[in-house]
Length: 212
Image (cartoon, rainbow, N blue to C red; front, side, top):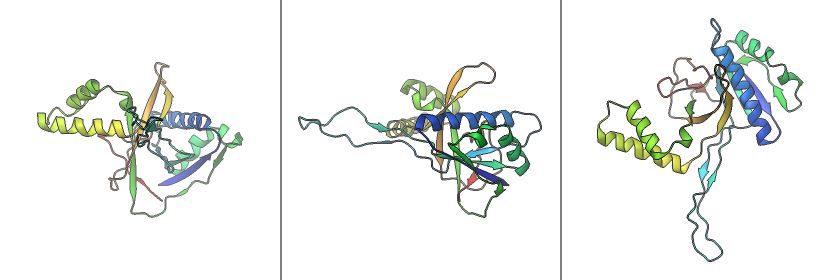
């Protein structure tokens, strides 16, 4: 397997647009018949966290939950077959022309024992508690009621404690806009290289990527 690192600079809004551009290009590649799949990693990924409540001018603790938004980072790393990486980069001439982007060399992946996975969630971060409960019940129909409640409590706790970074995408089939929320998982081991159509992992399809 080979990789290439793409570094970016500019405002967070500008970088988010570049994220969307590259994710869309990977999606086109991964949905093209006969093309070797490409996976995406975000080396500088930062997950949002809940900040401590601060007292107001009267010394009373503010009740509003304060969140620091997550950020996918100023670099992206693409993994795949060297020839396919070169093809995708060639389809993005803006990478070479933009003063805000620097594209590294396509190189072999170094040896490592550490892996992580970037899990895709479509709209999970904006689910209401009732919708989240229905989604968990539907996806885990074999769990007991007690296990479902435990799963729901964990997901709800996580939703309150963190804001997942996301990238806005335009659907190739309908043209509608939607957001892909990305969660970094470090509790993974080496697995088959099988990214989804967006170059990410799904709960049922983990694609562990090397960390170096």
